[in-house]
Length: 415
Length: 148
Image (cartoon, rainbow over all chains, first blue to last red; front, top):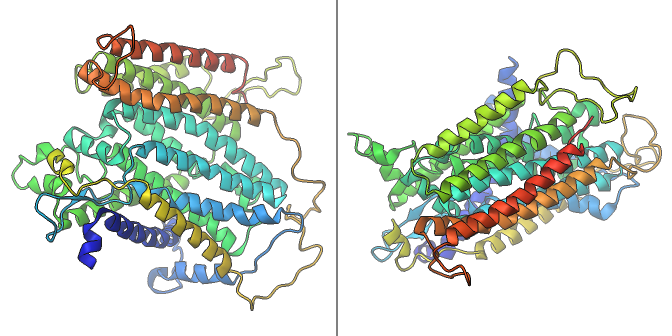
C-alpha cells in the first residue's frame, strides 16, 4: 500500500505537499522565534528564554495566546472583507511553495529498473510564471485588510503596500527574463539541473541576482521595505485593527512568503539542491565525488540529502532577511519608489537587452554575460555618481518656484 | 539524466497537486478562522471600544477618502510593464530555441521561412522594446516617478 502510493507520481507529490505544509507551518512559528532571537543577539539581549529550554516552546505559547485572545472587529469595518482578507493572504501564501524543486529525481527499490519519480509537489511548464502570478496575488490580502478595517492608518499602509508590490514586480520580472533567456525554459527543476550542468546563475547573472534579492525583500514586505507596517508612522499598517487568529494569519502569510521567496532565490540562482557550485568539475577531485552524487543520484538517500541542502539554503536566506532587518534603516516612501523605477527598472531593462543581443550572437564565451552585467552595474554606478543626484536624496519639486517645494539639502541623505 | 527523465513512469506531475494544495489551504484558512471562535471567550463591547484605533483620537470621517493620484499612475505603469513582460516570457523561450538551433523545427512564418527566423524574432522584440522604452522615458520626463 505505502509502496504503491510512494511509487506513483501523484501519490509521491501529495505526500511531499503534506510534508511541506507541516514543515512550513512549523517553520513559520519558529521563524518568529528566531526573528526574536536574532534581534536579541544583535542588540545584546537574551530574547525569549522563559518558556521551555532556551525559550523553545515560545511559539507554542504564542499560538495558544493567539487562540485565546479576544476577536475584535471595529463597528464601521466591512465585516465580510474583514474576514476574507487574512484568509486570502494565508491561502495565497501557502499555494506558492508547491512547485519548488526540492528533491530532484528518485528511484525506489521496489520500482521497475530505470524508472524515476520527481520528488517535488508539482511540476508545471510555467513554473516561474506560476510563482510570479501567485506572488502578485499577495497584494490582495494586504489591500483588502487595509480597506475593510476602515482605519486611516490601515488604509494608508495598504495603499503604500500596493504601490510598493506593484513597483517591485517590474524589476523582478525583468531579472527573471534574463534567466529565461539563458536557460530557455520556465520549468524550475529544468533550471536547477541546467545550473548543475554548468554554473550557478548567481555567477552568470550577478546583477539579476542582486535585483531579485532586493525585490524579494520588497515583495515580502520585509525591512528595509516594510513601509506597509511602519510602526512609527502607521501603528501596525494594514493589520492595525486585526487581533487574535486573524492577526496570526497575516503573520503566517508573511513568513510563508519569506520561505517561498527564499526557495525561489535558491532554485533560480543558487543551484537549488546542489551542495557546492561546480560540483561536476569537483567530482574529478579525489574524495569530493559525493558532492556530484548528491546532486544527481536517484537513490532515496541522495533525495533526502538534497531536500536537506535545499532547506539549508532557504534557512540561510531567511537569516539574511532577519540580519538585514536589524542592520538597515527603513526607506522613505519616495526613496522606495525611486529605487524601483529609476534604478532597478532601467538596470533590469539593460540586462534584458544585453542578454537578448548576446543570445542573438550565440553567446560565444561562457563568462561574457557575467562580464556584461558587471559592466552595466559599473556604468549605472558611474551615471549615478556623475549626475550628482543621489538616488536616495530628496528631489526638487516639479514647480520650481513653489515656495512650499522641498529643496534638496546640502548634504544628501544616503541610506 | 535525460534518458532517465524520458523513461516510462516518469510522467511529470501537472496541476493536479496544485489543486489538491489549494483545497487543503482553503480548509486550513477556514479552520484557523473557526479555531478562535471558541465559545467560552470573554466578550465585552461598547460604543467607544468599537471605534477604530487612531492613536486615541476620535476618528473623524471615513477612512476611505480620496488619495494621491500617483498611486493610480503607478498602477497604470505597472499594468503597462507587466503585460509587456508577460508577452516577453513566451518570446524568450521561443527565441532561445531558435537561436540555439538556428531555426524552428516546429513552425515557420510565411514569406520569411525558417532561415531568417532568429533575426525576425530579434527585430520584432527590438521594435517592441523600443516602444516600451519610449513610454518609459516619457513617463520619467513627465515626472511620474517624482515622489515628495
